Image 1 (tube, rainbow, N blue to C red):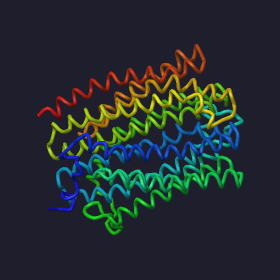
Image 2: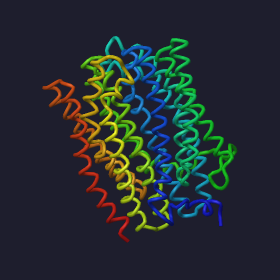
Image 3: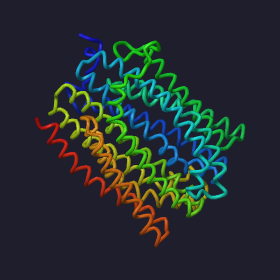
Image 4: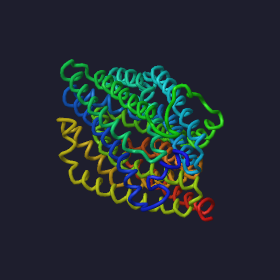
Amino acid sequence: MSDTKVKKDKGILTGSLWRAILIFALPIAAGNMLQQLFNTADVAIVGKFAGKEALAAVGSNGPIINHLLNLFIGISVGANVVIARYIGEGNSDRVRKATHTAVVVAFFSGIIVMLLGLVLARPMLEWMNSPEDVIDLASLYLKIYFMGMPFMMVYNFSAAILRSRGDTKRPLVALALSGVINVILNLFFVIVLHMSVAGVALATVIANGVSAAMLIWFLLHEEGDLKLDFKLLKIDGRILAEFARIGIPSGLQGAVFSASNLFVQSSLNSLGSDYMAGSSAALNFEFYVYHLMSGFSQATVTFNGQNYGAGNYRRCRSVTKWCLFLGIGFGSVLITALMLLRSSMVYIFTDDTTVAQIAILRMMYILPFIMVNSTSDILSGSMRGVGHSMVPAVITIAGVCGVRLIWIYTVFEKIKTFDILMMIYPVSWVITAVGIIAAYFVVRKKELLR
């Protein structure tokens, strides 16, 4: 029996499913939320010690960063699915080749995103109507941030490799350590050296370097077929094509999704820096819910990938049900807590009453509806896990991106208020969820009712 077969299960293929999902999903959620906690500290330090313009500059860059990242992050999802399936099949040779292919792709995709970010940072901010009092700071932040893209890509692909086997704890350890380093450096660069947004960006680059180095070290000392050997680093064309078949639709979905958010951010920027700052503050709370739910979405990808590879279709159906049940349960508790505490929590980021009230208004529009979007994400992950990546991508592009663009150029064009702009989120999420749910049952009937 190969090392892969010895170590592949971790409750993914047999045993108590709900327990295995929690063991897998909660470390991912905890890691993502821990990282967000450190990012929240970044924004809070900038908002408190560098002013609302710096807060707006840092917070408004999210759509640009995500737009350039998402295509390659999607390919890492493809790597997760493919390696998980090979593990389920017990194909040791392909597990090794896929692992080394993923690491090479990670490094070169990081270089590409870095170069694109450096070239496009200022033009994209100008296209997004960034105000004059924000654009210089935002451009500086982006250019420094994108210098760390190779580190971020190596971390994401390495984490995908480990998660394909069910290992979610070591990526969490790496995030925890790098996050602590990030916060310490933020305090030093911003408060002591008065570097403002440049200090926050530089701290992030260094922290990403630490987390990437840790995961590479873990892979170098791994036992079995996931062990990294620098001498074996090369791209296997056939495996890369499999990564791309599953990952590119996911990446395009994320990229186009982010593109729609660029239009939303551009519309938001046109309302002024107060709305940018308030929205940036509220967005931190939304991210906690997104990151919690992403753990269960990742679980559907990995669990379905392994079980589909092993021909265990009934367990695939159960995986989706449990991920929905557990994800919605945990997410609802967190949303309720954030809603109850919203009036006091926004002042973590700003002392400006106007900015705080805008943040509270955004939370009231967005938080109650996030579970609709998260349900779509879990069902999309389920479909990707069994090899159907294009279907959720097309539906999301049409349902989210299409609806948001139509809304911006019709409804918001006539009534240019913050309230009208925020309504774009729940409307697009509900429409998309209807399509995703219908598609899931079609894929379920085709692939999992055998």
